[in-house]
Length: 337
Image 1 (spheres, rainbow, N blue to C red):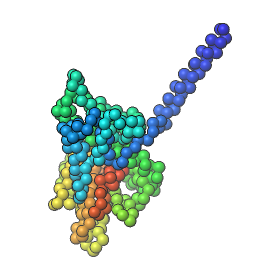
Image 2: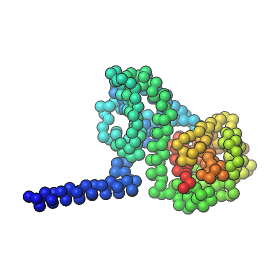
Image 3: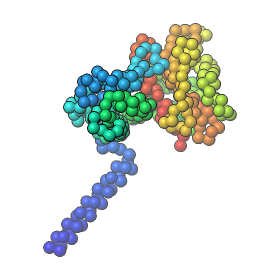
Image 4: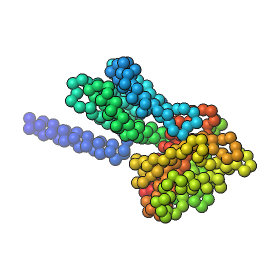
């Protein structure tokens, strides 16, 4: 009997050691055992208690924040595509959606609260569960945290896009960026080097239906004034005018500062510490081409160089939001180790 107990104890110890080793290996590999999240690009699944909530103040609040117009697009497109279901239909399949917002109205709740979960049922995944006493208190809390919610859902979108892009990355383009700027940018296949000169690099993706481009602009950092919108626009226009020609003689790319004014925001989740995001439209002077752009301006780790990563899309008369999100995700992959 003593021998049997010893064997049992030894077996249990081996099992514990095996489990600990398995957990450590999983952590080291950085891979998740969760299924890949589902859902269309830029889609948010809203889980409500009933249809009346969607038709009332709750749905109106959500649509006002997450369904608002994406700035800088020539056609009206919402920030996110919204789908909604009652909680009774919230099955395991729907739980795999990438972006989920769960609304719970409980009259006996002592206070409104917001819970945030990452990769709970799938990966990548962001889940917000908001519990409130009534629709009015939900609306107040949702508006107060709207920027945080938009940022989290946007982060999940970029993560999913790069998980698709990374296995087919263009190593030649990425190596050229690293060699010139000491910066890692995960460039997917399909992009090619269009031009590289001192302080300027242009990567293009040209397919029959649309075009995407990434421009890297650099110059010595001497003053905080270089982060001013006027300075960013002037610096970007100078390089675009010189290096990105249009299809007709005397034409060139430029930021549109007349019809759709570019807007700037300081973003806190970009890989570099202090970063200014700019969104708007570009067009081609002396021609009829145009489209949306997004750019990020920051200094390198040594604070000696200021960079602007400029991404654009050309897809005439077609939706452009998701193509712009792809470019945005590529720019967000930038880092200096």
